[in-house]
Image (cartoon, rainbow, N blue to C red; front, side, top):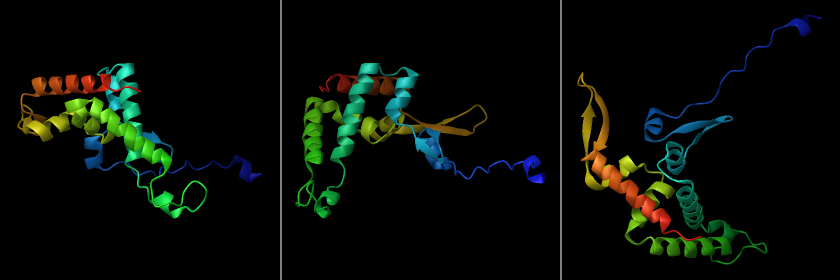
Amino acid sequence: MAKTKRQRKPKADNRLPPTPEQAARSEYASAGMAYRRIAVIDTMLSRGQLTDREFVLLDYYRQQASLADRSPLKSCIDFSVKGGDMAPSAAITSALLETARIERDMLSCWPIARAVAVDDISLTEWCIRKFGGRERYDGKGRFIAMVPVRERNVIGEALRELKTAARRIVK
């Protein structure tokens, strides 16, 4: 009878949160027993920086580029009907061709689209890498963050360039 009235211990939270360096670079959400990194384009959609159509097109490009970047090693080891040659699988080859076509259609806008959609680099970080940055301090002299030089102009131009790249993607 004592077993039925005994209080259960609360479950311990054994999840390790992202490191401070990881948390500073991107956003994370709880996903069961782990934390999942939220893609930059998902964050931009939730902030209203991208329209639904631009998000769908950039997500399509992200999926194709991720598949194209996969190693064809598994298909070379797998000697079943679907693999076995010393060449990439049909899905990887198709994704390689589709990614090349999309990047060709984006013309000079493809570097920012690849950085933001595929490599998950924020617009601010991309602008700092391309144009340089400066340190921002608060009123008490404490360091806050690195920001691009001429922040508003540069980030606005980068966002317009990303939107142009998204509009040039044809499914």
